[in-house]
Image 1 (tube, one colour):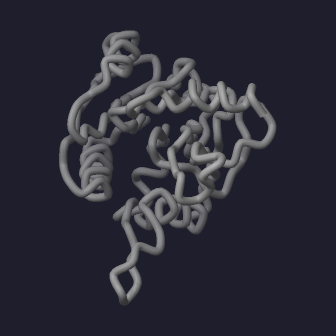
Image 2: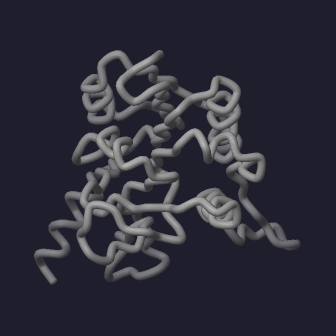
Length: 197
């Protein structure tokens, strides 16, 4: 469907159920094509989204997990015409640091609108057509394991490695973090923890 953004697709990775907070945000994007994908595993699901966006000649792909939503409109960043924009998302990793179990999938740094990064998490990504159509970006997502079957890198790291190798720029929208809704809103909890330290 044509829009002020060109051919835009919003793809939601549904791994069980869509959070109502995300649904409310998506309802604020009238006249946009929103597609829900429920395939497993996650990297295969992301590659299916990628394959369809490539075949359909989509100008912009906004890919997001079903359990997060943005503080500000992510479509506003299309005007910046960047290759890839990742939106910071708090993630729960107590095995890394039990005292600070909430970490970010993007190194935060200064609170600027857009900052170059080598690596962003894949929880919520805005991707330009030139990246989708590039031959070195297929398959875009993969998980690597060593000979003992232990996971050595995830789909977001592989995606960013391929994008960097193909010459694309990766940006982080540090002023538009995502709420990550598990049993509690991790962004809200992170803000509380920052106040206590």
